[in-house]
Amino acid sequence: MEQDFFQIKRRPLAGLSAILSAVLLTAGMAQADPAHGIAMYGAPQLPQDFVSLPHANPDAPKGGAITLANTGSFDSLNPYIQKGNVPWQLRFLTHESLMGRNRGEPFALYGLLAESIETDEDRTWVEFTLREEARFSDGSPVTVEDVIWSYETLGTQGHGRYRSLWTQIETLEQTGPRSVRFTFNADNRELALLAGMRPILQKAQWEGKDFAAAGIADVPMGTGPYVISDYEAARGVTLTRNPDYWGADLNFRRGTFNFDEITIDFYGDGDVVLEAFKAGDVSAIREFNAENWASGYDFPRVDSRAVIKSEIPHQKPSGITGFVMNTRKAPFDDWRVREALITAFNFEYINDTLTGGAQPRITSYFSNSPLAMEPGAATGRVAELLAPFNGKVLPGVMEGYTLPESDGSLRNRRGLRRALVLMEDAGWTPQDGTLRNAEGDAMAFTILLDQNNSEHRAIADLYMQGLEQLGIDVSVELVDGAQFTARTGTYDFDMTYHRRAMSLSPGNEQYFYWGSKAADEDGTPNLMGAKDPAIDAMISAMLTATTRDDSIAATRALDRLLTAGRYVVPFWQFTAGRIAHVAEMKYPETLPIYGDGPDWMPQFWWYEE
Image (tube, rainbow, N blue to C red; front, top):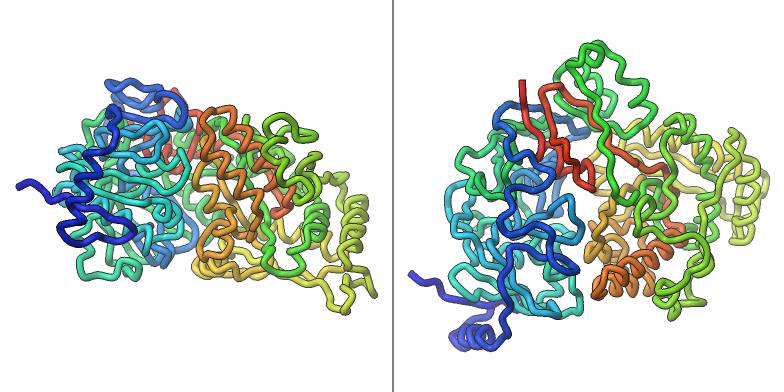
């Protein structure tokens, strides 16, 4: 029986007139040619008949079981709501979207649940046609009704990461038995791509249930290659490859998701994980410390080649990793205080002590990539974009900003002297060994950390030595993973650890990371509370750019604003991924430009005796 077509405009429209309006609107719109993929600029690189993704092994064998390890615990198996702690790997293994990324190509998507995509020249709308064979894990077909319900539910009840797109969708309508069209209310060329990247959930599963309040037993059904076959709350979860997975023969999936079983066990901290790996209880771990990588893997199973150490190069931006300051609170609302706290961070000494000096410092949010701000004063298109805000932005944005360097010694006297001058400029003066403001209040704050990460505590301990010399009363508060997530999600901290990865195709997610609106919404990555019209304008310029050059210029301008905003005390960057793994785990010789990531290992790996 032919389905009735219907339309959503933020909420379902009711009545025959609404249905007729939707059909007439659809008939009157100019049509574009359907395509198998889409790129932000120009055409996607892969032809319609590509055999497999370039960084996949289409002949990879299926089989084998591996065990991965997370620290902390979990109390939810629903990655799509704000509530609870979830094993972070789930959304990469159990659910799918209309389109999928090629990790070897920025700004491009290819059909996954959708067989084709259409859009107009200005990308004011986009239309997807579902694959007839697309199925949920229970064998039921994926319908347009599921798609529309998923976008509305995630946009109104789901995790904060999904809400921004929903506010930019003017109408969402069924245009054919397997076709759905999004019409946008914003001038944002990336929306046509972003609309293809939301997980599709099964509407029928949630009839009569409160999606946002889902308990651990309410596991959302997906279309992905894995299903959750077993779990024990806070201890571990097992995923089994679905033998009836609908996309097993799809070129986009060829050579991927090869393990029959993936178990994710949870441990108290990283040190315990390493010991479990040495004992053979864990199949692979990622190492983020260069010193540990060089000296901590000298156990017998490495010597016998039962365990392999693999380094995976990449071309990704550095992103930002460090201690973030909550500018919603004093004294972090003063940029001079933030600059002083960055200056007091003895990076050269701390880096040498904890990593052997092997990892270079992050110099900006997009460092290590062509998207990074260039040294010196803003010029060319970057200067043009920033010109309307000249005189309103912080020092360093227009003329250039470089992170302060220490002399590498334990005492860091030069850095502390400069930090003290900045503090005095901001109204904080030393009185009997304590920094106080004009009202006599002592400067004091707490660094909130997850108790499961010993490295972050070690960094904080070394940092505190310099802060105490300045006369700051600083302490560390250690909490468990659940409390850390809850506290950072509601911005209940002074300073805390923050890690935000960046891609070579930055887009709409930048609003979620540091847009002004995100600063006032719980659960966003805008931990620093950045509220800057210039930042919002640069993100907008990035999203409306019609050429790659204009997009790069807008990103470099954004990088200047974020870096000179002095929101984060930066640590070191990770210029290569480091994975230690059992010898039976193999990966393709052709590596994606993005290197390692949550959707590379274990997705493109396989098991071979």
